[in-house]
Amino acid sequence: MNLDEFFRASSTLNPKLTILIAEEKHFLPVNELLIDKDSLLLGKTSPSHGGFATITLDQFMTRTRQLSLKTDLRTLNDHQLVFGFRIVNKSIVFY
Image (cartoon, rainbow, N blue to C red; front, side):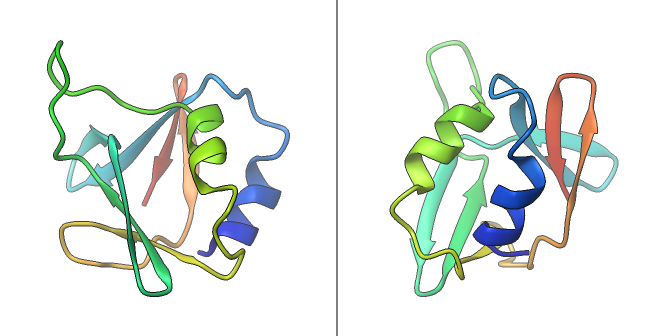
């Protein structure tokens, strides 16, 4: 999935939804965005004051607005391409 596909698919969603990554049977908070060539790496490694914070859809859109729409979304730990997302409770879960 690239940013253009994600922007179009999420354009009508609540901007307060949090962003998570599915890893095995768990959902982990996305709290780090890194650019690597033509990819945006979604990470979960930066601790916050209260543990591990997560970003919202609105924050994600603000932080990625200047990137090319062709930018791939990948996971930080293994650089695996994200191929979609689903809504679980009040979160967007990339898988």
